[in-house]
Length: 212
Image (cartoon, rainbow, N blue to C red; front, side, top):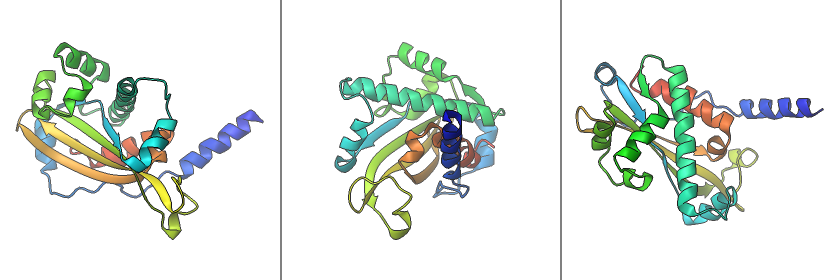
């Protein structure tokens, strides 16, 4: 009986996976040039913040007794690891720097998670001795629920839903600048469900990255 329930839950999760392109690329980036010149890439620990409406709900999902900075680091490393794993799994042409080695090198350079948001990303790429770094930003917020969403989204309160603005940026140590940027707004379930988040990275993000 337990196995049947688990199979049904897995089926429900997979049935929620989107097949349409979720990421909006607002500029025409020279993908071929980026691919040709940026061979070694590192994934940085992610940055995530919450607005005042969604902050309490996010905190309920994690241990409220843990120091906020410790929680932030744990989440940053957890998402970084999944992103690295999925990009490495589906794209063998790119030389992905192992996430554990990335964090070890950051520590050796005295670059903390808090520093990453403030420092120049091309300079961080140079410190890691890679051609580019991928930096993801999660902004948790609430939005008004429309009629089509009422039965399918995780509700925050009456008339509201939890969503995440997901920004992906690629910074180059070669050009000393940002070379690619994509954005998407997704239901928070896609971030907190490991199955859906892995699918988001492997089948929605990776195909639009300029490394294919």
